[in-house]
Image (cartoon, rainbow, N blue to C red; front, side, top):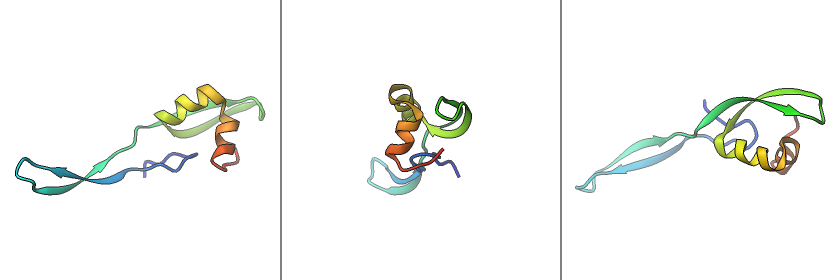
Length: 74
């Protein structure tokens, strides 16, 4: 299953609504990327499955601060 390793975000169930108002189920997938992230506190790379929003936030505040915010130990 496509799921973020830090936030746990995964695909959501949604509805397509046609012009005649017929509703059918569909999936809204999350944009998951496999990335190697440098962790300076550990001194090595860590491979993680991250959403694109996770990657942007990690670039801004750092991977350890982001993991701590979500209660994940790396």
